[in-house]
Length: 128
Image (cartoon, rainbow, N blue to C red):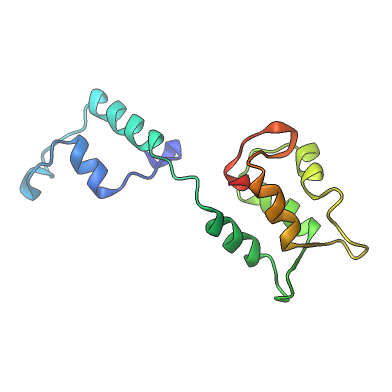
């Protein structure tokens, strides 16, 4: 499951397996049918995060604690964190928000996130 980008909770795994007793866990296998059920359950319940999660993530990039983030750090962070965005989409993310020093105020990104859509109309967990 983890190789497929999913991280089921122990409760989800036990539910799919029919809540076996602890001594039955060592002998109980996972057939393909149960694997698919687990994958569907976990994929459907994927948490995209809250606005507060978004703000916390943005604040991690604010190294000086002054309410600003370097635009280049946002670009690198988006790519490093695995967000599937093209270079053009990343440029659109920071375009018009950078000051003369290349910094972006948190509030500028917060306004984007409340719109609910990413650049070029893409919906993304980054945009909560």
